[in-house]
Image 1 (cartoon, helix red, strand yellow):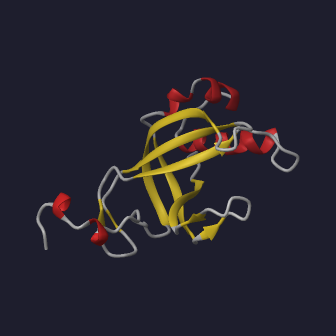
Image 2: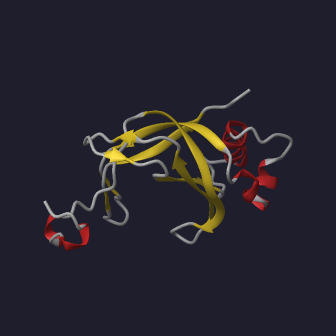
Length: 151
């Protein structure tokens, strides 16, 4: 095996991201920002969450401390996804981060107040799927399912 990964034939390089097993993990909130969604029809609150421990992936390789999962909360209200639901999703992150005395709107206006906080989150593995609208195929991946609220 080659000791320099940049001297590896590109055909032999695994392009997939590590998949960490479904479980509870501590994450440090590395960044939070409001960004336009892909469709351009609204905005998302986008979290970059970094692992706090080394984890063994489902394939057996070591996933280092600082491995990042991205988590989005849509800020676009729809008939089925109300402002109440949006507020609950933001409040769950704030409560998990032990940020108190603020509103979801305060967090949207100043998401930086969550940066650096440690949260516990439940990770699940999403199956490979194809977006019926665009035809894009998304590989199996680890994703944040929910946050553990700390009292």
